[in-house]
Structure formats: C-alpha cells, structure tokens
Length: 224
Ligand SMILES: *Cc1c(COP(=O)(O)O)cnc(C)c1O
Image 1 (cartoon, rainbow, N blue to C red):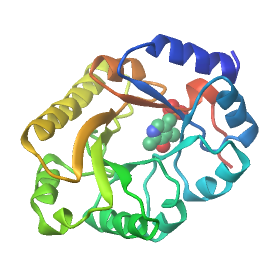
Image 2: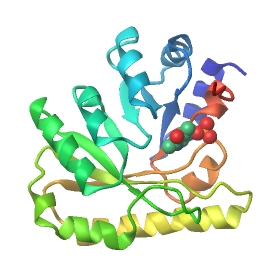
Image 3: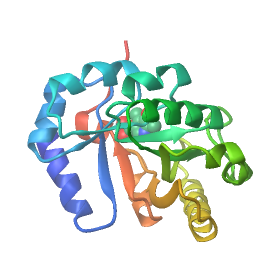
C-alpha cells in the first residue's frame, strides 16, 4: 500500500476514538509528507531539529509539527517559533530553555514529559518521583510560557506483548494519578503519547491519545 492508503486506513480505524495519529516522517522526503497531507494528515513528527528547520518551509503552513526526539537545550531556539508539541521533555533545564524561547516568541509551547517506562537502561526520561519533584519546585511554577499537557513513553523493544502492555499500563496509571492530584496553572493533563509501528494496537487499548507511527506509513527507513 502507498502512503495515502496507509494514512486513510489509520485515520479510518482510529475513527472517533480519542486517539490521534502522528505521522512520523523523519528521514523521509517532503514529497511523501505532501502525499500524506493530501490524504488529510495534518500532524507530523520529526526527531531531528535539522529536519524541522528544512521541511516546514517547503510544505503547507497548517501542518502541526511535533518534535518527538531527544531535544538539546541549545537547539530549542530553532523550533520555538512554530513547534506544535514537544513530546520528549526530560529535564527542568530543558523546560526552562523552552520557556525562555517561547517567551521570546510571545507564545506558550505545549510539552509532554517523557517517562522512563522501558526496562532498557539507555532510554531518557523522568521517573514518577522526578515528576513529582518537578511539580513541587518553585522554578517550575515560574514557567508561564510552557504548558505540560501530558506524558510520553516508549516501551521496551521486545516481542513480549505482556511486558509492553504492562509498561503502557504504568504510564497510564501515572497519568491518571498526576491528573487527579495536581492542579497547577502550567499543567493540563490530557495527552498520553505512546505506541509506534510495532506496538500501537496495544497502546490504543491501554489508553493512548497519540500514536507516533513512522515505518507502517512511510515504509522502512534508510539510515546512511
Ligand atoms: C522513529 C520514532 C517513532 C516511529 O517509529 P516507527 O517504529 O517507525 O513507527 C516513534 N517515536 C519516536 C520517539 C521515534 O523516534
């Protein structure tokens, strides 16, 4: 199947669920993104600032761009004018820089906190205590140009469906607990970004509101 068919099939099967498709277009040319756009897709995910600096100017301006990858503080300035949602915020330092650049652009930037749910050691992200400490800190209260709208997580890369499911469940439980117990002006929990090409079906069952799907839409990636 081609890109258009894939987009239509995904969006049809998501139907009127509460879950939205983020089409992950990293490494893919603008022609394919335009094809997905023509099939109705408006939310696209990239994981490199460099691609976010090059692609948007060649594409329609009503695309909502999502930064889904690890973001370095010194690169926030390049995406701050237009980025719709930053998915993988993993430190107060990064949040402060996003706040600063958002202020400079006279906007509020929506962010998700990345939570470390996988067993793999190398994955970035907060744990539960880290988020609670963040929400309790005065530095965080001062950040008026960011809005934490939810959590993001990546499950372990494994064939063990039960493990993936339990990792997604742990993210959903933490989301529910934070939503229930924190009432802060810069926190409005309504998004859970979880699920990729290999595990989106489980993620949707466990309460995902945003699946980030790349290869199942655009085909496998060629890293050179
Ligand atoms: C690349 C990437 C995806 C999409 O991966 P696929 O397996 O191709 O669907 C999702 N989330 C993040 C953070 C990524 O870097």
